[in-house]
Image 1 (tube, helix red, strand yellow):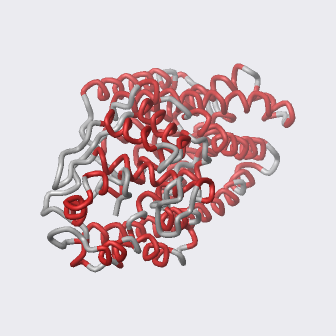
Image 2 (cartoon, one colour):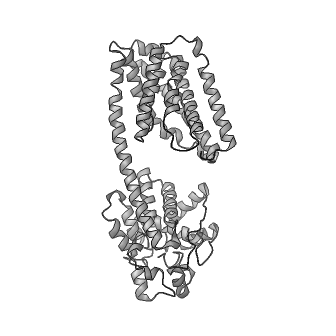
Image 3 (cartoon, one colour):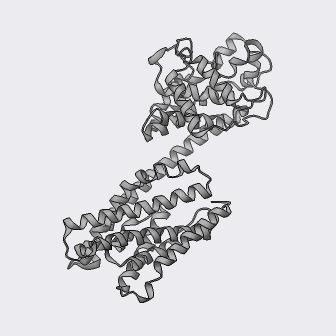
Length: 441
């Protein structure tokens, strides 16, 4: 939302207006205002703490408000925290208004569903087993409103195609929000018990422990990303003509992995594999990468050692998992004529077969210093021609399906002098440069 289109601004304004309509009955409402103020302050403090630790938002307090208060009063709980919480990107005011309006509508919907199903009486009783039904329905309403609004802003502000904007949003959000809903219900039941609001606040202690653990995980992931960025930047500096190639191979590998039905953890691992597949170039003498003229057989053998160099570099990085095998084997061919070990068929790790296709596809569809990019259709045709001999046909098919769903944008990766691939091509032909027929270097 850095440069927000006019239609997205209109959408945010409409959502904000709807939120104000939800708050309109407040002046005539008979509600325990001390409870509203206490929950609003608690949510604002929790939100500031959670966002400072990069662990999302504190839904249990909002949902506890939905279970305890009339809908307009419950919706009011979200406003101070949403309007005061830190915002990382511009436009700050618009983002805060959007967040406040979105949460106001979601909490109002959850409270209305809970109220209409008699959940308030079950909490006051407390009839705890019966209270689970209305609370579950309220959580579903809360999640559904957030999903609908998030999909809309993705489609309008980020120009995500409508078919993709809502895909998977609800299913990904439901489980964590359900956990927050259970914590909110526990808060509401304790709040109405003889122990009072102080006991209800104790429910947040386990949530704080969970936030701390998640913050540790987030910092660890950030360290992983920094490690990978440093390695890729070093490769880009040494072999500048492929600048951006590693990131695009990582993206293509991720697209293929998703089409193959891999779980999220493996998809991320395949992305790492694609990004780091050429890290072994750091071990190749710069004079070979920048040599004028064709390579000698001895020089070519040195360059073909780069997968082994790369594997040595990343072997001790445990979080990479099977990505290390992809770095080592992404130049193997299905017919056994690849390098460094001449593996064939299923002996080649699946991660390496994925990266090999992603690498070849990006090499062909990127403009290089020595030739223009091939059209996507021509690159696809070449991959299909080499499927079964050089590439895994199943992986090629997954890439074709991913391209059908998401498309591809070729990019310029070089603006300097011709590199070693151009010189190799002088003696061996263009296929040597594009990983089809001879393998990328």
